[in-house]
Image (cartoon, rainbow, N blue to C red):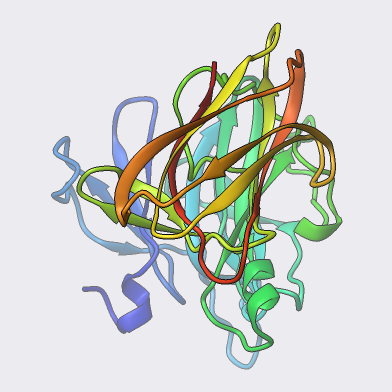
Length: 309
């Protein structure tokens, strides 16, 4: 453990081009250490990074708080982090090595009172760059009080010619990220695969692993960019219940085109699983899929997976 309680949190790793790994962590200080090839032992001294320049009676000019995320792109080293608590934004600095020296460049996303926290994770995928962070949208859909119920968010990241990062608007005000691929509905799809949902939770058992539970009337899950190809004939879902319910299969909207309705009946137990099948209207192409749940009062059933045929 390094320093006070929070000075040992939020670890992240950068592996440089020469194979050397670096571990970073800390709040309110930024610490780093070189790692050995086993990735669990240190190859040097633990160091407090000079990114943190505390000035008496002044705010830290780098606005570092916690959640460091180091990476390299096009010859530049980046240190992104949760900044300016609280609320936290996402700040970043650039350097010429994995340990700086760092030059503060500003915000990837400014703080916003809608969320007390916002930790960065940045990746490149299929030719584009993305930043992940979080807000508390789910929390405040449930209660007016703040709890650590974090909603994961993603936005496309763009760089200027000099390597600096274009500042993004707050998550709620930005442009939705376009799907990077499509989902094949003819393969078994775990029920917890979703772009958005309402009212659902997940649980586990020894037979099915993770499954979706707490399914009530008018709850739903959405899966984006489902490629139906030339069209399906049937829909199947594996469920368990001591009561009953229905799954409405809709396209592109909660009230969109209805492909079919799958009836779920008593299987003899909340973890006694059975596969239910229904015919569906034939549709082709790429669509967002909505599974909308209908039934009486209370919890209706658990759902393990679904698939079209």
